[in-house]
Amino acid sequence: MKVLAFSDLHMARNRAADLVTASTEADLVIGAGDFCNMRQGLDEAMLMLSGIAAPLVLVPGNAESAEELVAAAPEGVHVLHGSGMTLDGIRLFGLGYGVPPTPFGEWSCDLTEAEAGDLLARCAGADILIAHSPPKGYGDVTSQGVSVGSTAVRNAVEWLQPDYVFCGHIHDSWGYRGVIGRTQVANLGPSVNWFEVKA
Image 1 (cartoon, rainbow, N blue to C red):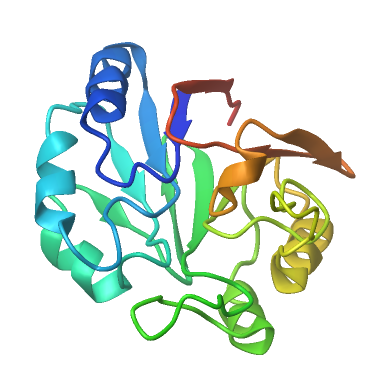
Image 2 (image 1 turned 180 degrees about the horizontal axis):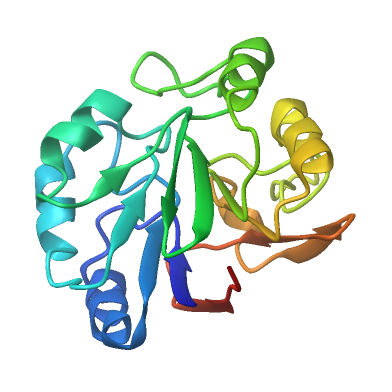
């Protein structure tokens, strides 16, 4: 399966246009959160992505709540947050929000490590784990050199060993690629990222 994956669109119109154009070659498109800015403009962000005809799976970032994303997403789009699904034999599980809580204030949709761990415990197995927040120590370094990823996400990756974990959230680490055991870690960013995933 040819998978197109991205994160942190933040209403960037040119980035959205590139993703829509590339999506004509995709069997599946995955968005790993932060489609709008500070809980504003989500409907417009979804409109920017409305030209994607391939199956589209989204997780909420810390810039939108799960409820807001479900309400704004076009018909037929799958929103995962503490939940999973299987598509053409590929098992997907999603966890949105900022983990651990961000310093950004009341608008940010965040989870504690314990809350994230409880939601991730629902996952019995996955080929692709989609987490807005990166696993601790992998693609999670800020411009100040601080590792701010999630231990709950890292623990889930170590336990589940999916083929891939797709994340975003930490803009300074966009483009990061790494490995945890047999799992490939990708901090995506809003560019076109291609992956070949086997069922």
